[in-house]
Image 1 (tube, one colour):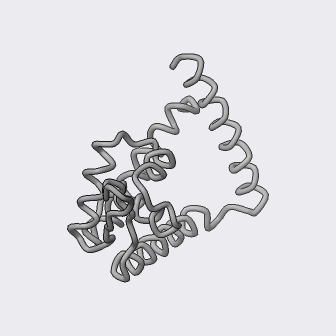
Image 2: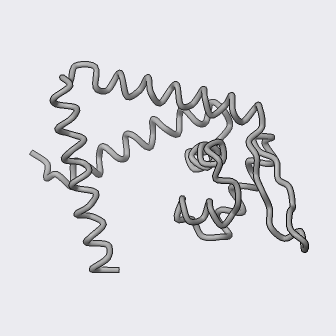
Amino acid sequence: MKSSLAALIGISKVQQTLLQRMTKQHHLTVSEWQLLDHIGGGENTQEILAAKTNLDTSTLSRQLKGLVTKNMVTKKAIGRDKRQLVYTITEQGTATAEDINTAFEALSDDVFEHWSTDERNLLQILLNRLDKSMDRQRMVKG
């Protein structure tokens, strides 16, 4: 039997592959889809997006530029010096995000189809606990 962390690595690889397939059908990367969701949720400046996504400025800028090029979001310069940009999701971006989110929910339903509510709840509790433990390790080692 694999250790818990080894099993999580394998699960993560499979999940990433499935997410890449879903987003590729819409000509997006997984990161672009997640960013699109943030923008659709009202997080609309680079400063806010950087804080929420933990992406560095250059990576975030590159992904935002890709979303603008693909007509998923628009950008508008604001402020006196026009240096701050506000991003807004387009109709195409909203439709695309909804399609991918629906596919993601269907995947979740398929994966947990034979799990009881108690099993799903227990997994959620354990994953939240693992997340906190991993965060503590990151802070100690970081």
